[in-house]
Image (cartoon, rainbow, N blue to C red; front, side, top):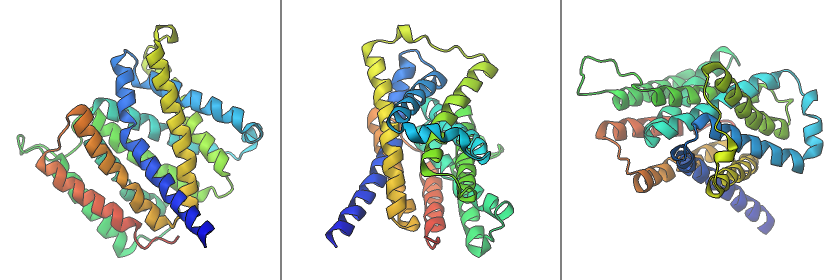
Length: 295
């Protein structure tokens, strides 16, 4: 009994740790941007170092990576864009606004599951979509321009929204690709960000900051973020393996609490009333979407 309780407690800790990491990880990325490094450059470095460290630790799993089925390519692209666009969004945009747009992901998950996995959404799915869209409408509505459409207003808004779409796509691919190992899925995330960062640098002509202009503090931040990514990935995987899916989804909403406090105390960001109201509706929809899932 005590062993089971210990596993359960550690699983909850793993999920809370992951929520804390993703609620605060925007801050070190902003510090790197202030030091002169673009979000694409810092994303490439942190994920590349994370991938390298994990490859050295789990060498035998790395050797089998190239024998994975082709579906891992789609997971690499989707997961890579999800994480890269999220980092770029929270660097330049309001943290909570970006996260709430990201948490519209249950809408896209339901649509993808309906049309791709042939899973019927039912009345519950309609409610989730409706409440989420209402929350987004209220949050994006600009009362200073009453005739404008309630759509994302900035590049960071669009990146946050697309990150949520990428997250839903990644989840759908993961659910469909039951033949992929946990290690393969983890590698797909890290190498996906590295690949998408390189593609962004090549396609959009962004300059890759030369590592020789880094000082010791910059390298320490990069290494810290890489270790945070590795640790949170494995702890979250442990958590979702040993905790019911419904409970895990709700626990991970703690990320929003961490982000709200961090954004206020570290960046002085405050949400407007319409953003609070819209955000509450989006969170309620995400919670309702999680309740009653098959675990």
